[in-house]
Length: 72
Image (tube, rainbow, N blue to C red):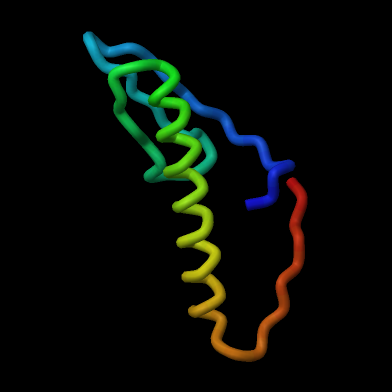
């Protein structure tokens, strides 16, 4: 993952648990017993999701492809 990328975690306490989502990446969500554990789990899950998506996109492209950065 490019370390310059910044994503937004939406977090809240729900009873004894902390729950959170990454706004920009559907499916990246976690639940932990503490605020700090939640942020770490979200970071790890986000990294894994981005790597999985990257590998899936490259595999779907086949052999002859280009990678181009797109800024938003």
